[in-house]
Length: 629
Ligand SMILES: Nc1ncnc2c1ncn2[C@@H]1O[C@H](COP(=O)(O)OP(=O)(O)OP(=O)(O)O)[C@@H](O)[C@H]1O
Image (cartoon, rainbow, N blue to C red; front, side, top):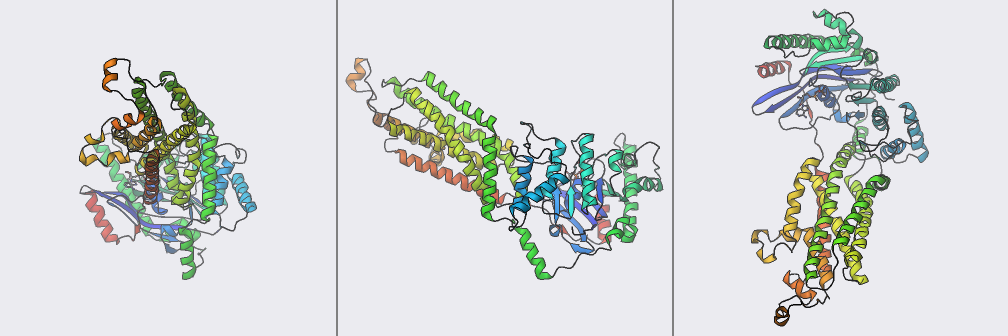
């Protein structure tokens, strides 16, 4: 493992909004050495995660946010994007139906160099399973909130294992113990200790660790209000507090005591002022200690003896280019993604059964209510039934996709940020895995409802009906995918869903005559997938039908009744429509939604803030004064 020591200097982050500037991080300096666990601690909201993210280039670019600082790797200036690191986020997301081993194998195949053999992949997977204590649960599905799987601690260890595939020397973890009970927390921390002992440089954020977990830490950075309160050896924290006038009472763990000392006390205005003064004093003392020079910081001296070999410029450029694209071939990415997506679809048997039961129930409801004959009444019944089928099928498919896709999108963004695969490979695999199931469910519904209600009994018309229902379901899923891709969250996507469906229902060709559509909205019906489904099904059903004349004589004599299916279609302005035309229009909507979703996934990647060189000490001080004023 490459020996890596990381040093940061004058790390600052400001956020300017509405004429006000907040210092989120304020002149923090420190170091993390190889073979050590460095923890970033502090009260809630003190900037722990922000600092960790700053070091590894993961701060989201927000309007008004500026990030400054200097990073050095083994004494040489570096940018966060140059670091070969593992970053384990607080929230993990996995495909719930994949087992632990399959998840790890998936990552290994995507992350390991292209010429890695299958045996090498398996060897790596087994080694990581053993290293993170996951061998026993290797063949258990990861699970989710809805389906039980591995424990919280095992999920965290799996996240760490996935990040360790490419043997990064630096390992960053945001709150790795959050949500874990003391047993699981000790297990995770024990594995991190083993990683550090194996030569990794481990940096993590922590809330309040127990005394036994604290004893596993080597170095500590304590923040309050974004300011540095302490940077040095974890076991020297109490000495630092004492030396600055706040000796630790007996029996109070040193981290608990110090974090209390440097927390803002909001109980009364006086106490708040006093606590802020205390924080300012600790910040000054801590910065003075850092400014005393790198030799003053124990951590810096420890890695200084292991300089990183200088890479030649050409080799450096090649390494950068390599890291900018996924290591695996596009075909491999597609194959692996398809196999993962397919497993997720077919193994989620509960979801599949629910969807199938839903389709059967709806078909049975229609079948028990509608009995179509050739009476005059049946004209209205047919139109009503076909319009309900068109609306119902689209609602089910759009809502289903909207609910599931935004969650998947988060995982895809994360995996894309790690450059595991291209969006095209992901998108193609998703469509291929989803389409057969959607088609199968549509055929199940259509195949049941068609004979039950008594639609025209010819094999050709039956086949066309199934095709139209399937196309509509695919178009609806594609629209759901588009909404899920452009919307920032599931809630936002669900909020967009009703108005869009209402518009599509209004303009379905049955509820408003095309001549009555306001001229500014004439284009809307051509985008309504419900309209194309309804129109296609109506043309398919009504063409060739001869209706019985009504029983009352006057209507019979004047011919004021619907004698043929063609007449019914004329009344709806569908006289010149064809099933083929509707199917082509529906296919164009599918293609448009897929293209839009792909584009949105490609464009909507989170942007990270770049780190600028810090301003001079004098400029930083004057800014500090301005902000606090
Ligand atoms: N990208 C960003 N844009 C704007 N503000 C941000 C950004 N990242 C963090 N902040 C702000 O910085 C402050 C510190 O947040 P951070 O999440 O680092 O705190 P923390 O110490 O990790 O808190 P906790 O212990 O509660 O998780 C918060 O006020 C947060 O809103």
